[in-house]
Length: 151
Image (cartoon, rainbow, N blue to C red; front, side):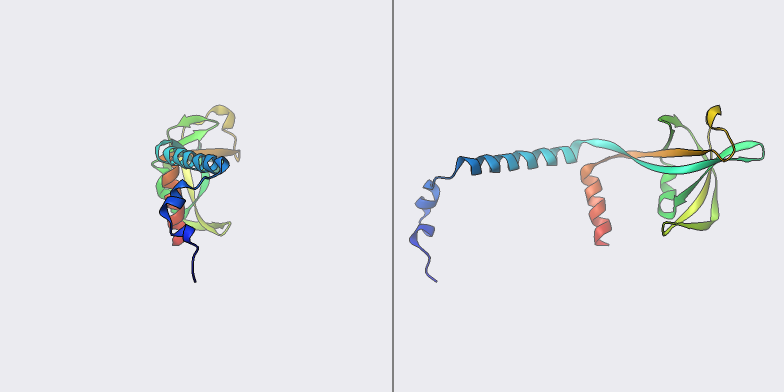
C-alpha cells in the first residue's frame, strides 16, 4: 500500500494547524488526570466498618453482641469504636467458636464490653456500631480492589 507523501513529510506534520477546541480538550484531560493522581496519592481518609449489634445482659452486666465476618475479626482490635459519633474504648470479651452464615459470609459472634451511655442500656436494644480503621488513600484502595479482582 502506498501512503500519500504528507504522512512521510516531517515538516508537514509539525506545521499542521490543529483546532483550538482539540487543544483545549487535551489540556483539560492532562490537568484533570494530574489533579486526580495528586489527590489519590496525597489525600488521606478513614474507612469505617458498620455493624448492627444488640445489648445483652449477662451476669448483671450489659454487653454488646455483634456478628463480624471471618476476614474482618483481626481488624477489630486495631480499630476505634464509635456509637453516634462518640468514640469509646472497648474490650473484646469473647469470640464464639461457632460460625453463622449471613449473606453467604461466615460470621462469628463477638461480645464487646464498653461504657455505653445509659440511654442505650436496654436489653435487646439494637444499636449501630462503627469501627474506624487507619487512614488510607484512594490509590491504596484502588490497589486493594485490583488485587481482589485479580485473585
